[in-house]
Image (cartoon, rainbow, N blue to C red; front, side, top):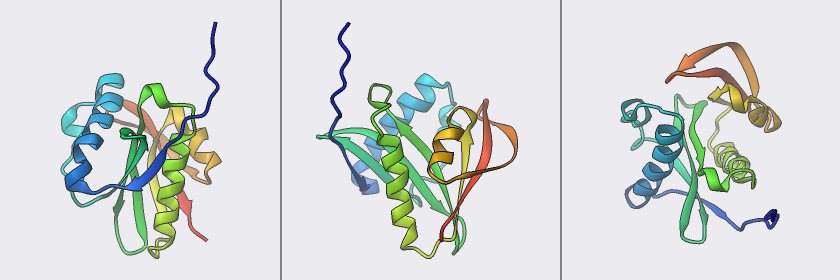
Length: 151
């Protein structure tokens, strides 16, 4: 058995909505609809155009994404964090979240929220998020509210 242990090289950028939305749709469709069975009407909720999106690229291939929505002047919500299945376990999701945190640190945001799938709570805890309340169902998947407080 051959195991590929070579790290991959990737970059993350703030997306240009008009130019990059097709890549965002492709990643989220693959992860949320095809893998997890989320209805497209729930996944594409009409809020994308007003959000800030992040895209991870390996060369010219878009491999991960997330969006941030500003809820008020001090609060934002991180949503739709997704990495293509064949590119997981390389630290791409972590780097996308860290890039979003760096971006928000310069925006006078003090509180970042996320509805995390229960299966990835430990991932977000390692990044400084704290679970709040009880698990709940969202799109047929167990989630929990989590928050990140900026210093």
